[in-house]
Image (cartoon, rainbow, N blue to C red; front, side, top):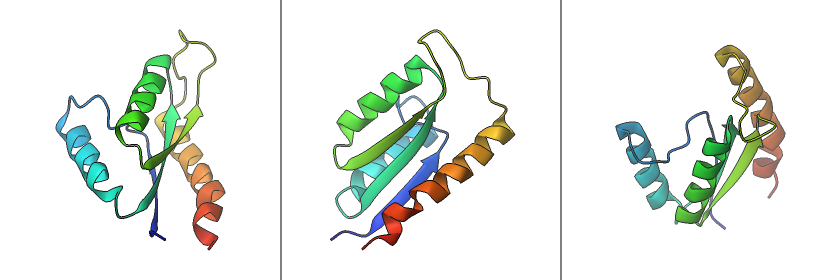
Length: 102
């Protein structure tokens, strides 16, 4: 059984158009063979949802959990960054049971 790693991030490391995304992607690509990785994203648009789907295809051993924050494909997020941080903290505690189970 591989050790577990939970990553909660507001940044989806796809598309690979910025240095931070590129380094995070290749780091995950390497670690997926040694760790049971679960990533949680707050999805704010239809475009971000498609990026998360593509990332899931590229990192087949990483489990991606998408929390959608929009109602239709045209809607954009209307969450203040501080609220987003608090939201992600709440999600973190909900997913802790994944890592406390043996």
